[in-house]
Image (tube, rainbow, N blue to C red; front, side, top):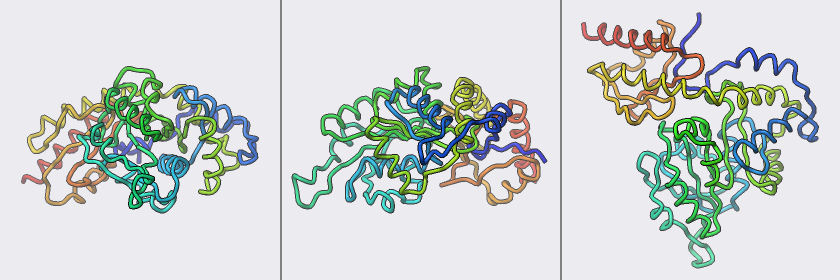
Length: 345
C-alpha cells in the first residue's frame, strides 16, 4: 500500500536521479581521505553556505553535537533557546558527549532577546564559581516552523563577537529559511561561525548532514567525528545523493511551503481545529484538536493510507514534502472531516 506520509520531511524517499547517482558513484575510503564524491560534496556544501570547509556527518543531531564538542571545552556553558531542537530533541547529548551544560533562555517562538543573551554570558576567569560561556546556538528555520529574522541573528552575533564567543547555527532546514526570506543562504550564515544543515530533511537524500565552518574548525571536527564513530568508509554512495539534493532540490522548497499554507487554510475551516496561520512559514503545520482518543485518530488515518504522528505537548504537526501533492492534502482534509463526523455520531 502506498502511504501519504506527513509525519516529517525526513520520511522522503530518494528520487530516481539520486538512486542512479548512488549506483554510479565513484567512491573510496573516506577515513583515508580517498573518497572523491565525498570531497566534491564537502567543497560544494561549504561554497553554498559561504564557509571555508565542510564535513559530511551521518545526521543532524550528530552534526549539532559534533559542533558543540568541537567548539567547547568540558564544563563550558552553552546559551540557546529553551525550545530549540538541541534542547528538546537531542536526548541530552551535550552533557554526555561534550560535557557542557545548557543555559536556556525563554524565547518568543524561537527568537531570543539579544539583551537576554548578553546578560547570560559568563566568564569563568572573573569568578571562581562561574563556568565560561563557550558557545551560543541559534536555530533557523526553527523546529517550531518559524523563520528567525536576520536582524535578530545579526544582533546576537555581534554580542558574541564582542565577547569572543563562537556562534553555531542549527540550520537543519536552512534552505527552507532562505526560501521564506527570499535570500541566498549566505545571507543567513554570515551570522554564525559554524553551521549544520541536513540533506535528508526536505531535500530527499536518504542519509546525511553537513557541518561547515573555518578550515581549522573542520580539521578539528574531523578527528572528533572519528571519536564519535562517524568516520565512514565508502560514504560517497551517500554523498552522491547529497549532491543531487543540493543541486536540484533546494530550488523547489517553495512548493512545500505553498502546500503547507494551503493545508493550513483548509484546516482552519474545520470548527474543531485551532490554528495560527501566521506560524506557517515553511513546510510545517501545527494545530490543536481536542479529541479524547488520539491513538484512535492515528490508527484511523493509517487505515486510510495516511501516516501521522500523535500530538506533542497537545500540538499536532503535519509536514509537507516532495512526495505530498495538493491532491493528497485534499484527501487528508477529507479524511480528518470524516473522522470527526464519525466521532460526532
